[in-house]
Image (cartoon, helix red, strand yellow):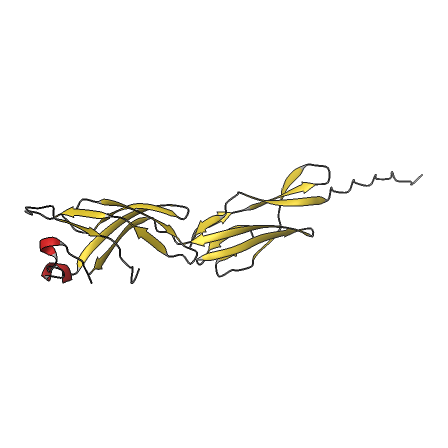
Length: 198
C-alpha cells in the first residue's frame, strides 16, 4: 500500500558524430544573404536539423547571424562555422560585389595611334571631348558578360570579364568602328581602358 509505480528511464538521445552545412553555397555578393542550416549525423546513422552557435573568422567580409543567415559585408574570403555539442562544421565563402545591371560613366581619350592618312590625326577636338559610355552587365558567380556602347553611333558590342580576389572587375572587348564617309578602309578600335573610379 502506498507504493508508486516506477518510471522506466528514458533512453538517452543519440550523440551527434558529424555536422554538415546546407546549402552548398560558396559564393555570395556584398549585401547579399544566404541562410544556412546544420544537419547532425547521429550515432544511430540518422540525421536531423539542429540549432547551433554560428560565427565567422572574418566578420568584415561575411557575418553570421544567430539563425545561420550569412551576410556579405566586404570583398574577400571568410570561413563561417557552426558549433553543436562539441562538433564544428565550416564553409569557406568568397564574397564579391554585385555588378549586375546598367552602368554609365564619362570617359576621355588620352592617347591614340593612327596609321596611313590618319597617322597625324590623333587627339583632335572630337577625341579630347568627354563622352558617355554605357555598359549592361550580367553576373554569374565571378564571371561577367555584357554589352558596351562607347559612342551613340557605334553598335553595342560584347564584353567579358571576371572579378578578381580583391573584388575588382576587369572587362575586355573589341570595338571596331568604320569611320563615316571614309574612302578607304578606315577603322578604329578601342584596345584597352582603365577604370579610374567606379
